[in-house]
Image 1 (cartoon, rainbow, N blue to C red):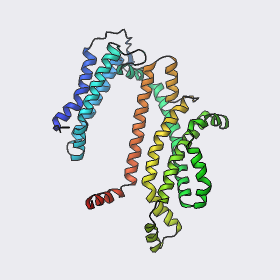
Image 2: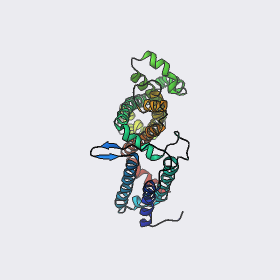
Image 3: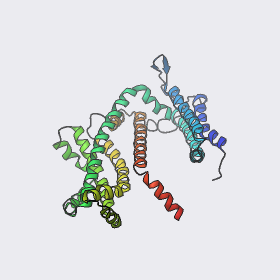
Image 4: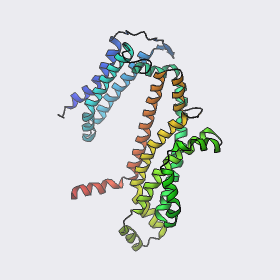
Length: 334
């Protein structure tokens, strides 16, 4: 792909979204769609107005990103590289708006336009927020407990052969069973639906984290242990200052994989008996054939998952910052 200049990259990044705004304003509403304004403070806003505000915020965000990235070569190159994709997203939103909302060429109500989807936040933003917070609380309880148990189990079976002998078969057996298969037992044996869902998330996180942590501990080079013993390190030092740090890259790999599993299990658990959450919200919307609300919940899930993944990447980069110098030296040698 031919490299474009920085001004052209800025124009492409915002151009598609500006065209999407123009299309929403200029293309007439052909299909019969109820457009009811909602009072927000002192303003009356309909879903088209809110949609244009969201697109305007995206344009401002990319302009700010362009200003910030200009002074850093790495960030500038990344901004230029992503410009054609941003333009394509804007054009796709324009086409989707015309075909999904303005003309409703797409089959309704199953494929609403983006403006209608944004309108769900206008109608019941408080309820969506309430269910989002429920999902986040459920996710954090399950993921953090599962990660803690997974790392602990992985260290245990990776370091102690006897623990490996007794626990490893249980780990392998439970790992091949989908977490939701335990739902009937969890709902029966645990006191609340919330506790049952937390248990399912813990199960799906525990297996991949424990497996890769054990592999990381077991793969520690013997030369590192010998060097630590030469310097006077005891068994505890060898474990927590040699084996565990060596396993950290695998630990974060397992945490990243478990993050996706946890999110899938979270939504499935919420759709099978929780009193709240985004999965619960999707079920309610589906009953009333309000598919624009279903898409709104999916959008929130995507944003939430991306944000959690970003936080994990930041923590990983911080914990493994010692690898930067090592990798750069290996690159120089190569």
